[in-house]
Length: 196
Length: 196
DNA sequence: TGTACATCAGTGAACGCGCGTTCACTGATGTAC
DNA sequence: TGTACATCAGTGAACGCGCGTTCACTGATGTAC
Image (cartoon, rainbow over all chains, first blue to last red; front, side, top):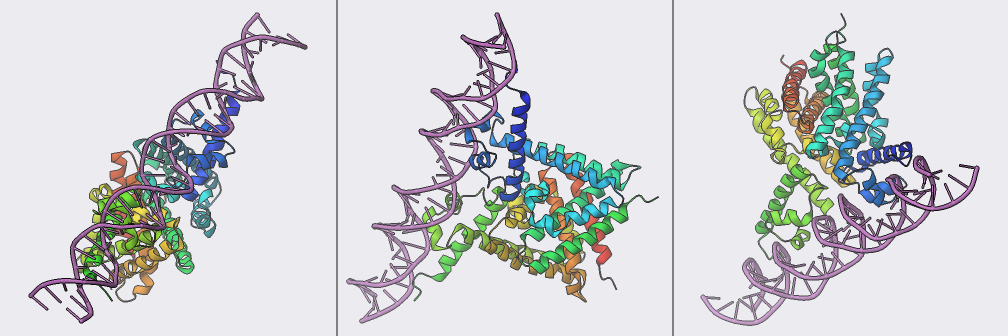
């Protein structure tokens, strides 16, 4: 028998997920503690376990949530003409490089996910597939399945370039990385695109 | 006036760096504590500060050391014919995917480096350039400078693919990622190569 | 409609633990004579 | 060559702190009558 309105609890849970997404992407998963994270969400540490069974549970759920958001966002880009080019330019922008907390969860967290628990990897895999499918439907509307390989390679190149641009100390080199990354991604996209 | 043999201390320091490199790549930087790391190197925690001024100092130094090792390793590949193809196949092998502690520091640590201190980023940038130069000299012996852009894009694609293959839960998908990554990297390499 | 009650999201202190760092010390070493 | 000494790499306990998690509790809520 549900006593409290389910809606309030659900809203709080989503607030925790949003806060966790931003914190993880900014400070890393290992770099974000439960107590400070809950404080950011306007709650105290104890309330955490009314919503998640452990930090690992939160990590897995947050990653799924972040990828769902990214997939929705990409679908919006895809609706307009030349959406893919705009999406690539936005992905490899200085804006995105400088604001990981608002950006791609893969670029911010991928090597931590690779070291994560099976649950975390399962959540990542499940969340990644719809993103890949959405991109593949753009690249090869006729046979999306065949486009998975190229899409994954392009995604890897985008994400690697963004990480490099963030890790590098020299602003000029960082800028060139983004610029060459855009050129390479666009040419890979054009090469595999189904323009027939 | 140097009392102890400089050589012993240098050997110990290098042992700490090797241990740190493996631990960081396996468990992450935030996931590796100074005390356990020193125990792995056969020492106690207190000795650490005879070699490094802080953990951050160790991190920056280790990253520089790891990239130097990677650069030497790549130069060895480059000496034999078709070395680049062999290097790419080795980079995107299941062996490399399954043993990050022996592998590429960029693939294992890049997003943690992006969140690191200015010293860490400086060490990464300084260490990355020789690797890029070595690859560029292979791609465009005539004008290596012009090859920096393509080399960085290929490197980004390799490193992103390896991270994805580690983060993904599905063995079949992971295998396909590596396979398509090899194809894409080889075609990018061939496209920019100076075969004249 | 008003009151008594059960629920449970959220509180906040406490738990044991590992973190990065400090420090008084030990003892093997290379040097000086 | 033998002895006294200064050096300093390495020891191991301790520091305050934040970690993930537990737990007795509070008090606003929706329900029952």
